[in-house]
Image 1 (cartoon, each protein chain N blue to C red):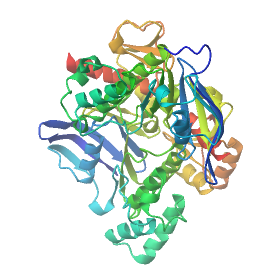
Image 2 (image 1 turned 180 degrees about the vertical axis):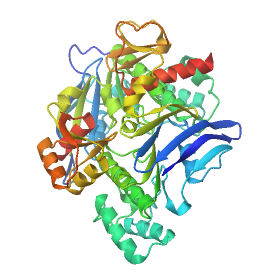
Image 3 (image 1 turned 30 degrees about the vertical axis):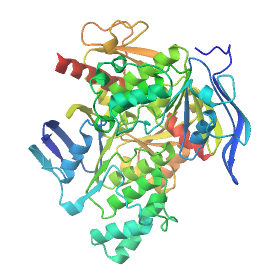
Image 4 (image 1 turned 120 degrees about the horizontal axis):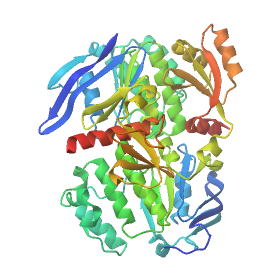
Length: 272
Length: 291
């Protein structure tokens, strides 16, 4: 089963938020949307869950009851305790009390939240609150799980735990799609879609992306075109749109360099 | 520019800070020299913020000594410092031009809004709350550096921006360092960490590792499982209580011997090849944090 969006276009008044965006979300895999603030990630996800109606394009999703959605602010109620949050969402989805009790115990233990059931969600650390948001999103065993920046504000140790939960859900056959601003996180997913100004800039697994560089990326000592150069630590890179491979061309550029080169190419195309 | 000979511009020696019976920072030493970009890493609660507050002179150490530009931190010394907090510290109900005027007056410098470059100058009359987050970040950075500080402290400087904008911000941070500024960056993002010259990693109030990315990762390895049955491999290892991470379709277990992982997989009748690979920086953090 594959869910997703095809040729999606969305306008908000004068602003073209998305143009021709296609993203497949297959079952049993983690798909990522990566880009900066305003790139269009949230709009794609909100179309997918039915919160935004697209101006053009098709959306393929399961029935509403089979969708799990975690909003960027984790979707927890800060003035309710952890247990009350779970009970409330369980009630919304009509889970029976005994079903809910088993599910709650299992999920809270997996998330490392057992023992904090009586704490207010607002008193949890950022990482714990995001994990609670995740538990709430998967409580009803959705077949499509949509996570909008689940790891923002989560420290690296909690992030590993959150990733374990996400992987666990995908491994049991759920179709998972997540938005992130971080490439190193997107790199770990089966398929990443880089969004820039409402369009898909490039798509592929991390291993495939290096083949998408238009032209060459070179490590240089002296920059001859600052608009096409950027630094990585003590090194400086420069992008060449075409021509013969330069002397110090990167053979296997990492995802960060690939995406920067593609963004430069897209800007030059657009700005002429 | 600060002239302290070879002395670091920022220096903490054996600082400890206790809050009641809780020790937030425990015997930490850290130094940032002119022209250096040092990254401070650690999970929430590791003590990074408390350490920064002591370095800035906002909090007194319970023990140990802090030296900022060769002296104890004071209001006068703080004028030579630029700080961009994670929340950016801008006034969202004021215009871009008013924010610039306010922060430059506070530091006693003159700055024309046109000097901020055409993109920001064009937004002069707009309320900060109405401009994009990328531009806000650019503005916060411009405000914090307008008085040409000798020391820059940046809290997750590039969170939420796209890779190209992040590269442009790092260009500016690097340019500051090249002009002799000491830069201290707190982050928990690996891409930011990799842009630093040197890293200091904290856990539970202590420094647990320091040096370059290679120094910190050192000999730490992860057991990596490849094969079609990644879901089953994941379930078997996570079920056995291992801290499992995912990399594409490969499963990784940081800090664990491959033979141990093979045994778990065999017992669960799951196929797959297991190899020992160098740990990533984030995996090293998890392993070091647990020790």
